[in-house]
Image 1 (cartoon, rainbow, N blue to C red):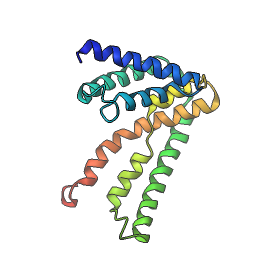
Image 2: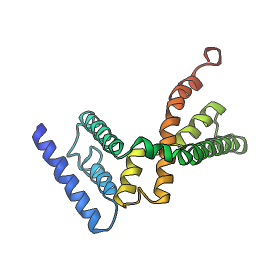
Image 3: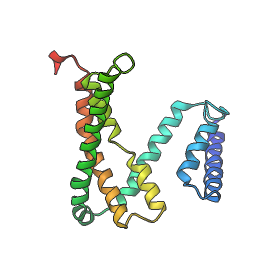
Image 4: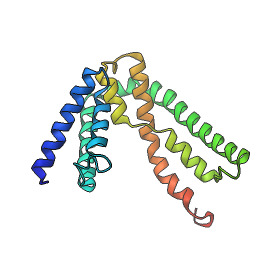
Length: 182
């Protein structure tokens, strides 16, 4: 398939997926996901160039984040600081601690099936504390709940998760290094 055929295939599949899932009263984001699985290399194999698709997907996420950024203002973010630093920090801290402790406890209780060093358990906790800001905000916006109290709380938590990613990106490679190189 040439580039034009692939573009038309992606657009047609996306439209059909969104329309079909809206008729079933399901989120359009789920339609995109199902259509991607169906036309992807592991099902019908209509779209086999996964390398090119990755670039297209990255552009999609960039544009989605740009549109989300257009909707926020500095005064609005300042007003949300309690949600960002209160709820967001609590969620990330609680999830990291709970996942780390649960992973270590499983290793202690089931040593033959679940071996995990504390570094790996901490990295797993960091990963489990994160969500996809782009997807969640898109879903909340589709339901017209961004301005509701729970919508503001969700956005605050997501914004803190985005801030927490930066130290995690530094910490995770450091945790994988030998102790003498830390």
